[in-house]
Length: 399
Image: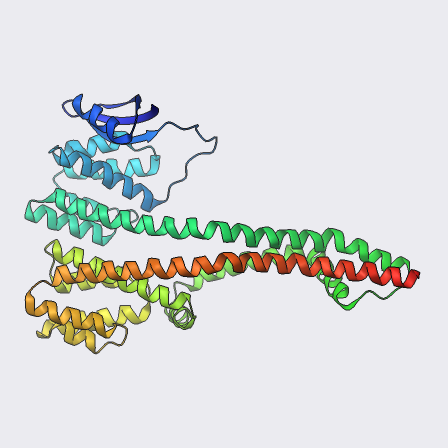
């Protein structure tokens, strides 16, 4: 049997309890807790604790908050009590203060959705609008469930990309660091041998010697330029002209451009389907969708559609005039407008786009691994060849 660590809330008192349970699977632990009238909010196999603190992003904190809240709402716990239970489990102090502000706002008579809007640094307009639609329809649990599924899918895609990139990145940077160390430490010693013997080093060795001297003498300048470039990028990314130029550059990039295009379309159709399913109007949904996409061309297309749809024109007709939307997708939307199942079709389109994105990422990352190996081998191999060439040159002179 395995040892599991759990945190759960007692339904009647709202007290957070934690402890350890021996069981075969995580599912067995959950069943045991439910029999004891406890709502499980976290069950993990017991592992050795890391000495490093856990640094969670805002999106990760919001995802966990949504998961805990959804668990309590499923057990028909009223919202104010569910938020208090969730607050007791949160460990991040800054986010804990945010949740506390939300609880106090609700106590003062403000709606949950409005309280979320007052904390935009954590909760997006999509989140607040879906909560508002759940409040109006009386199905807050369903709205929170939709939000959780959306956030979870986004987080899983992000984890998949990061985990897939880890190994190629390690190979590439290991080769790069090894190359820099060889150029800075080892190659100069060979250069000194040629100087002592009053010999002209081979051409490749000359290049490596000059590169090593440049890195040793100007490493502070190199690091400064990198830092200034990062700061300048963060400054200019807020400018419209720079974002437009960056968007065009990304879209024209052979591999990344296609993935970014598909990812932005997925984000748009997924968000639109969720908002429409939650009871939001098409115009308000489009206005929100404009804020969640990255590409300027798509932002402009959504803005044009939101403005013209007020005239009574169909969504598919307006999308057909925007070249950023693929023809097959527009045809599906046109079909959905005749059947009255727009939300379902939009969700299916989003799922299909997500599948395409994952397939493309998987394919390109599969190619990236051998490319990283080849690059690392090229860096180190070039230095080894130059060293051998230099050794043979010295031996020939000696002969």
